[in-house]
Length: 565
Image (tube, rainbow, N blue to C red; front, side):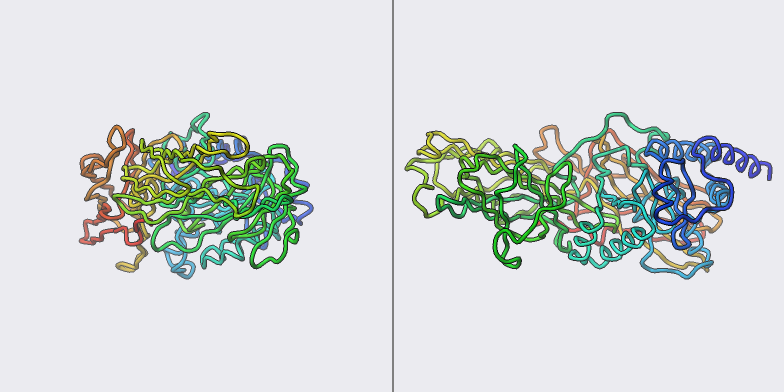
């Protein structure tokens, strides 16, 4: 009793002094009042009867998370600390929803899994029942994969973000694309940015790693995208390009959600026109939505055509932000961009033929329109495929890569021996060609196992993640409020790239993470972060065994982990 009173008292101090959440009855704001109140401090806001915690800044949220984490750890990870926090501010959290469902207080939802939002119990307590939280003037929904989503905060947009979430569950990419564009949504890659990676923050004792924002084109979760700009026509008035994509993605993956953007070195897009086979003639597709990082959004998801006035001496960049498995626990983004130098519009096109665990075949080509004035003079082309292979050949060459262990990305170059754009020896480049074993993953969440055993709801979860600091973390969670010993044990292999990434070294997982046993009703959470860099192999994934002293036994397997191709 004294321990609980002490916990409640400390939490009251924490709430009133640090995050300034109101200790009185929650206020219900109209959209206008909510926007007007954005700078008045953190509040427990209500939309349609659902409360959401609101923090003025990300720093405020980090501080609140740290304080609650310290309370939780100082009380030996007693979840009563988290329950007391929720009770004190009259807040229905994601954690509480999962608990109520497990205890039969609310009906079971077979599609609900709090670990799809986060594996961190502190963030579980700060997110509301739908996995949402307000930071500044934006409403966020969390994802334990790599991508979290946000939308300008209003109660109407709460419903829009829920609609996006429901569309993601059925992979309705057209609906997702429309909601994202129409309501000014954004996403943040938490695999790049530890400021938002609260699982890693908890692993660091509640501290945020400084200067850990790394923008990568890929994220080691089995999905790679390559964008091509194919110079298909010129007539003295226009240069025309076909914009297309190539993918390496898991065999079972649904269609990706694609966002294309266009920008220019000099900021002038007035002469550029866009068309597609479905959208009709050129100049019917407006460029209205501008992203400060990538340029103007092209309101299409599939291949399209761009034409640029031949006299427009400018460099244009076409970018793609593509993702799969959004809000399902294994969200995986990929990014690529291609530059079009309209003063010399020839480019390298990359077509994937196949990719497997031992090799990948790509065909690289330079398209020359069959139009006078757009030709390349006679002469050989010197190809450098980026892996140390250099050949002299023609406009099209195929190369087979031997697969290293970890995914990396190469630059392919072509030096034109003949006359092109008025010069001899013109150099063309193609960046970000994916090069690595498509069966290896740096980030993967196992399918959660849910059951009702002996009248109590049971949930088993596991995850591997490589964070922005380059460290691999394993997390295994055993939730079953039954007295006795809960044990988590891993068996099988994980894989460590050799020094030069030439191959994968098999490592017995039991040699780096031993069994963990806890006693009592609380969750058994096993987490380990390594200085080494590990992968899980879709062809031979490790397994996690969960046992209880009452005889319960279940093995969690990577049933939905497939090689990419």
